[in-house]
Image (cartoon, rainbow, N blue to C red):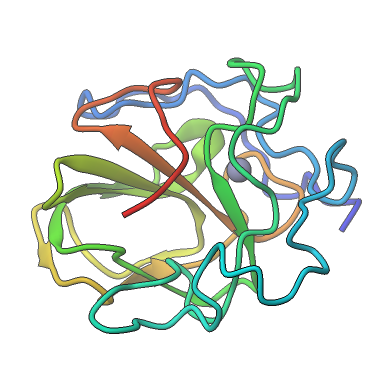
Amino acid sequence: MSEAESINLPNPNPNSEGAAEPLADPGEHTTHAAAPAPAPDAGSEGEGLVGEDGFAVAGRVSSPVPGHRVTYRYGIRNPRYATGYHTGDDYAARTGTPVVAVRAGTIAWADTRGASYGTWIGLRADNGRDYIYCHLSKLEVKTGARVRAGQRIGRVGATGSVTGPHLHLEDRPRGGRYGQDRKPRW
Ligand SMILES: [Zn+2]
């Protein structure tokens, strides 16, 4: 997936409702293929870092993209990002692949105004964290909706600044902004 700035409209249209918008550089996710530090999970089976099958296990959601694992990790240094590092975990998957709520909570926002993050959802979860789902092709919840862990909320896409379809998932404190993230966990 080396071509494709296709759906890039890095239009800074930050009229979001105060919900942290990514002041990110336009280069967010420029490349997964050419990532300087290849994700170690690429060929390592069974490391047990992330739920293997991606489906809920014992009441817990093991992947926000069921059946898919992290393909480009949080924290990888890359000067193309405003923070200098990758602020979330990426899950490469075909456009249209379902994404699910990692925990129960309320949809703080679900709209197309994420600028470089494209169509996005903010899940305000019951653990006090905000989980940000970016680059979606479709929204399946509305702002204000209450969701259960594992409930489908949207579809993977390639909106915003990307080179190919994937979910970029961030984990921020409630109301946190771009750069106030941690390695996603739930
Ligand atoms: Zn990403």
